[in-house]
Length: 361
Image (cartoon, rainbow, N blue to C red; front, side, top):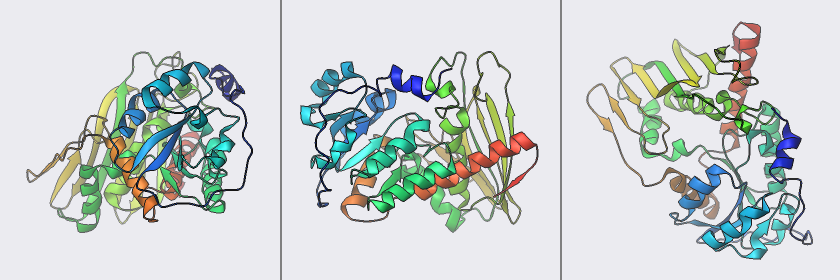
């Protein structure tokens, strides 16, 4: 498995390309009905999820791209009507500072590159959206937040589930407690992956591994379904197929202690298809299953209540919510602090698995 530099080389991120515009002083911010979004990284998530979602949004639209793959540029320009002046590569993206068409830079790169390019994005004076997980380490998360604060721009993390209506219901129930005090919670997410392929998700340096990729969904879910922060964590890693999972873990299980007798268990696995977030309470239970599927979230409660509100596109809802927070100068629904808290727990899980004992948070 090759490291960050080879990834940059293979994907063209080290290439030059379009001419470098002068880096002028920041433009003042404007109130707009629609914000211009620039996607950084044109991989599967940008191509097949974010770009189509931006055709459905009401408050933002795709206006720019940053890519290290020149062959992708004409395809994206034709499909999305992106003018030459809004096309950048990784060495020229600082020139976005001079482009009034673009209001938000969305980082859609491997996790290990989030911090570097989110900081570069903040330095353009544009608002920053970063895909989850926020970064590899707490230190990187803090650096991203500091850069956005210094440049007076907003930062949002792409946890689409917190924008989803059924998820928002269980978030509210953490406060209203319709089934009494929450006693125990569970968050499991995994896929039966026969052949994981030779991708960046299998590269430890680039931020690969299921605990980062989908494990943060379980961690974030356990936090929002309880409305609490854990005080300690235990974690275990398991690898039954070392010939495939050479650098990252195949299975991670963990337990969270929220204090007051409230406990949580979580799992992320490449050997089992599972997708559930569940709360056991004094007077019943409720769950979302699946709780983080692109095609829809569904749930139910012990009294027969159904959680089945449908929305057309989760990513569109997420981006419209974040755009409205910028337009109306409101706090972001999922700010950098949220991403940092999850990465702190990831680090604690890994530390606990290494030392074989609980880690206090």
